[in-house]
Image 1 (cartoon, rainbow, N blue to C red):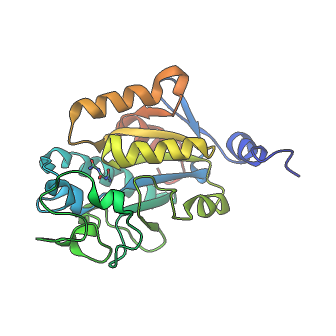
Image 2 (cartoon, protein in one colour):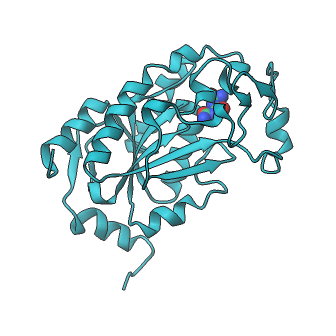
Length: 244
Ligand code: TIU
């Protein structure tokens, strides 16, 4: 019987499964692959390709392209070795009933959420722009959640799903670093998960914001979490798990 609500997490993290160590900042990130999920935040055409929501805000979307190969390498390894993969998509219902007016009004975009662009209606579920890019598209058995906010736990039920699967550690990739990725990592931190951000698996339209995010996550003894390059994550995984 758990003494408090964190005890199961501690037991899972320390004893119930083999733990690996990633050379990370601000120090080693220890995790059990069986209790870890790879999280891909919003790897959607709307952010990564021209003509989508990101471009409508005036951003140079070509800056996000380098994230795709690193994310693809990680997802391929996780699939081959049974590590849970979670995909999120920032998108809204076609009637926009889950889009607060404040979000709809924000900024001075060339098109607003729900307007029709070259990839269909911006940030609307089911439209081509809301699709995840082909290189990291979900396969059967993976968790895919539509999220109306920047954070992956707001109005999604994802915490309950992860709890039911015994997930305690999250490895984050996706776009954009300081918006949906950082918000999701902070939400995860407050819910008791240990999170690591993959440095080359995330990208921002603003290089200085990416650098600042990595720094502030790991500051103060991992106040939000850890970060490491994908080579360190794959190196730790390949060295230890069966089939590696
Ligand atoms: N604008 C921007 O940088 N990002 C978003 O609006 N959403 C995500 O980060 N997914």
